[in-house]
Image 1 (tube, one colour):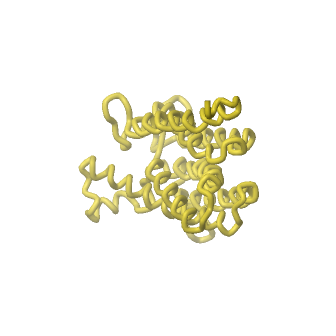
Image 2 (cartoon, one colour; image 1 turned 90 degrees about the vertical axis):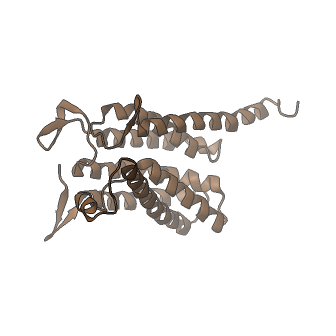
Image 3 (cartoon, helix red, strand yellow; image 1 turned 180 degrees about the vertical axis):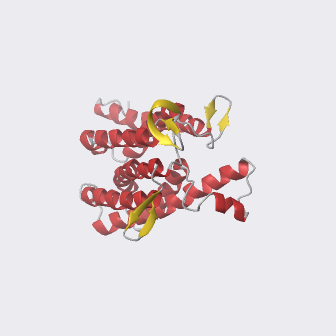
Length: 253
C-alpha cells in the first residue's frame, strides 16, 4: 500500500491525488468528445465540475447513511478521527448525485439530456477507472486473501480495485469503438448502468472487506446491482423495440 505520495517536501493522500488525476484526464476525454455530442467545450468542462462535486458529495452521504444503519456514531469526534473525511465513498451514491446534477444542468442550459448523458458516461468510466488506483494505494478497498496479489498489512490479497478499473476501461473501449449512441441517442447511460452493475455484481465475490454490508446471500452492492440490471434491461427493451418496429414498417398497424 502507498497511502501517501511525496510531492516535494509535502505528503499528499494517494486517494486524493489519484482522484485529481482522474478528474483532469476525464475532463480531457469529454472535451475531445464534446464536438461529436454537439455540446460546447464550456458546457463540457462545467458538466465535469458539477458532476464531480455532486457525485463526491452524495457518495459520501450514502457512506455515512450506511454507517448509521450499522449503528456507528457518525456525530462523534472519534468517528472522524478513525475515518478521514477524504475516505469512505459509495459508488452508487456518487452516480445518483452526478446524474441528478447533469439533469439539472442540462435543463438550466437547455441542453438535450440525451447528448449530456452520452457525453458524461465516458467521463464517469474514465474517472472511476483511474480513481480506483487511489483505492488500491490507500488500501480502503481490498480483495480476498490469496496466494498472489498485494500486501495489505501483512496479508496477501487480490487487487480488487484493479479488477474494477479493468472493468471500467473495457466498457469504455467498447463504447468508443461500437458508438451505440449514433443509432440510439441517450442509450449510453442505461448501457453503462447495465454493464457496470452486472460486472460489479460478479466482482463483489472477490472483495475481502466486509464493511459494505450483507443481507441474506448478497452484499448491499449486489442487491443494488440486481435492481439496476433489471430496470435497465426493461428500459433498453422499451427504447429499442419500437425503433426496430419502425424499421420494419410495423408501427401504426
